[in-house]
Image (tube, helix red, strand yellow):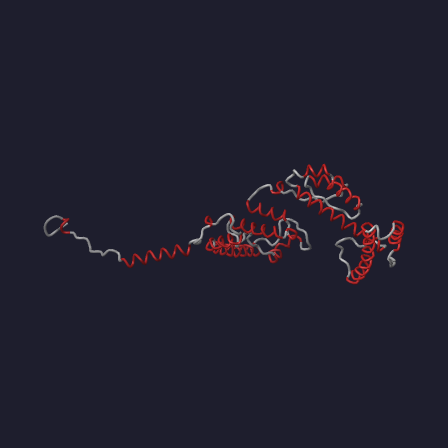
Length: 330
């Protein structure tokens, strides 16, 4: 290398470069900060929430936390749906128009192409629930709502879905499928109630006998003393009273049928409008007759001094055999 004089180092000078501007550096920091804030999950983290935080608040924070991820998930869901439509159209138009096997229906093997015209292939993912935590939080909210009105929810099915969302296997072993109940004698029903097993009343049973056996078990002093030490005593008592109410409802129905003189339609039967109106009028009259009998029976028990024993027995006899005639007490 030819140089004017001296060493090469003294004859080569670097080009002058100015250091980065402070304004440009601040602009870079601002861009990075805005990018992080846009892609950030949330200002409030899930770990900051306490165990007593309402489920609705947790779900709102979680939804805000996963806002960006949910948007990406929704777009992926839409893209996959469009891709499935294209694949279905390609299979319909370019593959053989008949199935390789015999299918049910008048068209037989040639039903393949019409099937693709009538069926839409969609992904099974849920774009509104992107993570396991979000799905579990949603089911927790439903469980809290079910506690306020359990009679309108299918609690076993709700728990099964909750376990499925958690990824638990063998759910049917944890929550057995409810079998169709079969009629049992009242003693077996009492045993099932004590063991917290389901029981059911049937329309043809002797409901008065069942009620007598169940009430005797509730009033048994030895059994009550032993059951007081059971932590599930309140639940057992509630289940027993609910079952007694079933028998009581069927018994009331049987007495109304006696007043009507004819059997009533089976429960939950859909009746024609005119027939239902006529039946309602007849049962209203029968209910008034039954009420009068029950009121006089109650009066004869709690007011023995109002009427003599012989007159009370005479009135009771007339009451139960009058069949709707008006009885006046003088």
